Image 1 (cartoon, helix red, strand yellow):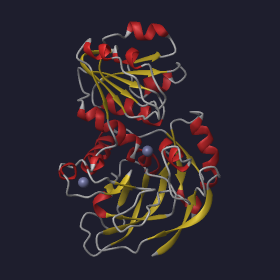
Image 2 (image 1 turned 135 degrees about the horizontal axis):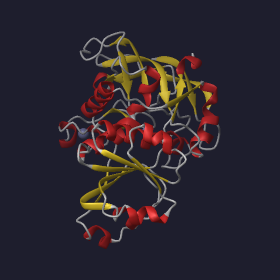
Image 3 (image 1 turned 60 degrees about the horizontal axis):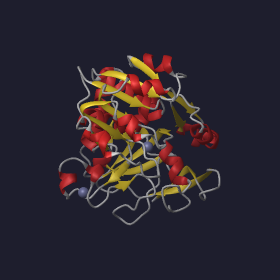
Image 4 (image 1 turned 90 degrees about the horizontal axis):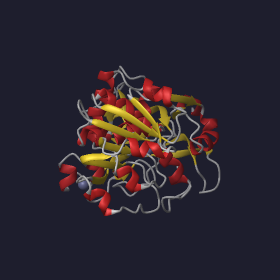
Length: 347
Ligand SMILES: [Zn+2]
Ligand SMILES: [Zn+2]
């Protein structure tokens, strides 16, 4: 075991503080990573504040992790010392169920092990990436291509794959009309990836405040959802709508913007149920679906895709001491478009 510097939440209500966490000894199939950058995901905030259920404290969050391999176990074959690597939202799964065997570890029937606040297969509680080092099974460690700078690579591990997976699954590409709802951490990546896939991309944001950015990221159209005319004008328009907003929406109004056989995919999670009027599905054989991160192979595919297409998140790099302030700004949507902690400031 080793003790490493970290930032942790002492409780659901206290600010995060500097502390240390224990990392297990590097096992035969483990990789030790010296973390360079960790992204701040909205889920981190929901989790430390206990809004998604009870969690163990003190808790170190962070599941957008990039760094360098500094040690490998004797049986490790996928990674070597010095490799640029990343870790996303999960660090283990059962590997035996149908979904794991299909490469969909995020949907492990026995529950994947979350990067933080999860119980690993050895019984220990997992602690996330707001720390200087992490030990992870090699199968859950991704290669980060040289073409993607460290600090912008971090948010790909959650925001990137969360939008890439449904865009790939529902075939965003040439000739397809794709809308992205919300222009935050997830939304801005959804726009970049969908545009790189060749789809015609529309942003549906509350206001036109980020319109210039949206168009620069690859969107062709940008509409304000605060304007009721938007929903009339865009009725029966989209093959796919990716909803990144975690607040409740008027489901009927959004579903009616789907054309025949279109799908509305939720990737943001409002805590309350969303009522769906079935007639709005009948109208054009529409579907309402959900999607959660991506499998390990698909996450690697996403990183390689982003490197090939020269796309990466737009980030604001902060020091470890600015995390509490950053949380307040995330809650006010005052970030363009992802905070990333420079972990060197934690050493
Ligand atoms: Zn996340
Ligand atoms: Zn499984």
